[in-house]
Image (cartoon, rainbow, N blue to C red; front, side):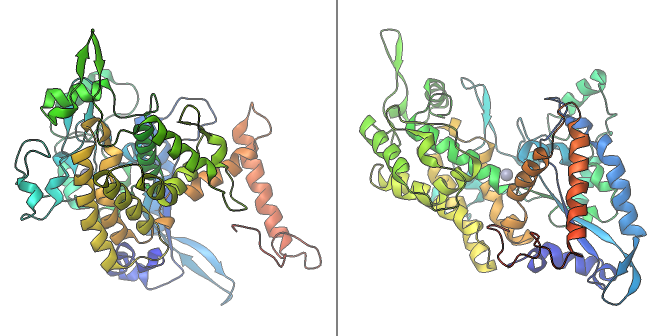
Length: 472
Ligand SMILES: [Zn+2]
C-alpha cells in the first residue's frame, strides 16, 4: 500500500457506494482540526458541534446533490460529489469529535467500554495495562502471574465497534444540549459508569458515516512523541517527565507488584531501590553526550545538540520531529550498551514498530506481523516499567497496525502536514487585534498569486521555477 487508494477503507467505499465510485473525479476528503485558537486559551470543547454544523450541512449537500464543476480536460460541466473519508486529530480533539471521552476509565476509543484500566491510588490517575488480553489464547505469558498482575489472563481482546454498533450504543442515552447545562452534566456522570460517551457525534448525520471502516484516525505523530518523551524522561529521571517516582513505587507496593522495587523508608524519607531501567550518572552522561554528538543532516530544521544538557542530564525544547528522529534512529543505538537486554529488547522493538509503521510503503503481511509483535512488546514493557508508565498513549500502539491495515500509509493520516500548514497560516497574522482577518486575507492573497502566476509565462515564479524547493 502506497496511497490511501490502496487501503481497505477506500475500497470499502467503492463497494458500498458503487455509484459514487464510478466517477474518479469525485473527491474523497480527510478532515483535520487542531488546537489553533486566535481568541486565547478558551477551547470550544464539547460545544465544537455547534461550529461544525454548517460544515456538516455542506458535506451533506456535497454528498447528496454535489456541485456543478467545470472539467477543463473534456471542456464540459459535471456534478462533483464528495465524501468525508475520515478525520485526523490529536487525541484530545479525537475525543471531542467522536464524543467519547479520551480520559478516565474507558479512555481508549477502540477498546470502548472494555478498556482495561487501573486506578493508581498514589499517582491519582488511571493507567492502562493488561496487554496480555491481546495475545493468542495459548501464549505462555497468559499464565505467568508473577511478572504481571498476579493473575492468569483468560479474556479475549476487545473488538473495535462498527458504525452500526456505535449507533446501537447511542440509543442508550439522550443527546446533550450544548452550552453550560450543569443539571444534565450530572446525570451524564451517572451514565458514564459503564461508558464514556458524552454526546452523539455530529458526523453520524452524514448518511455514509456509519458505513466507513476508519472514521477517526489515531495520530501517530503525537503518540510517538508522547511515548518517546515518557521513555526519555524515565530513563534520564528528568523531574516532571519521569514516570518512575516515589508515588509510582508506592503504587507498586499497593498493588503487590515486584517486591524488590518497593520504596524503603530510611529516617522518614523514601529511597527507591534501583530498577532494571535505572541509569547511573555515568550512563546518563553517556546517553546525553551520544545525543549531543549526533550531527544532523543539512536542511534539518532543528538542532538536537542545543536541547541536550550533558552536565545535568536534561533534555529541553525538543520538537515533535526531534522525538521522531530520536525514537526511530538514535534511541536504539544509545540504549544498547547501557541497559540490560530485558529493557533493550522491548525498546528496540517499539522503535522498530514505529519506523515500520511510518514507512511510505506498507504490506498487508508485514502489518499483520507488526500487529502481533506490538502486543508482545507492550507485554514486555509491562514486565519492566511501573504501572504509572502506562498512560493511554503507551496503550494506543496496540491498535495502530490494524488501523494502518484499514487506512493505508500513516503519512497521509497524521498531523505533521497540518501542523506545518497551521504555522504558515499563523505567519499571515499581521494585525494581532484581528488575527482571523489577517489569515483570511493572507490565504486569499496566496491563492490569487498562485492563480495569476499561471499566466505569467516569461516571469520567474515559484511555480514555474525549474528546481523545486526542498520538501515541496
Ligand atoms: Zn485500546
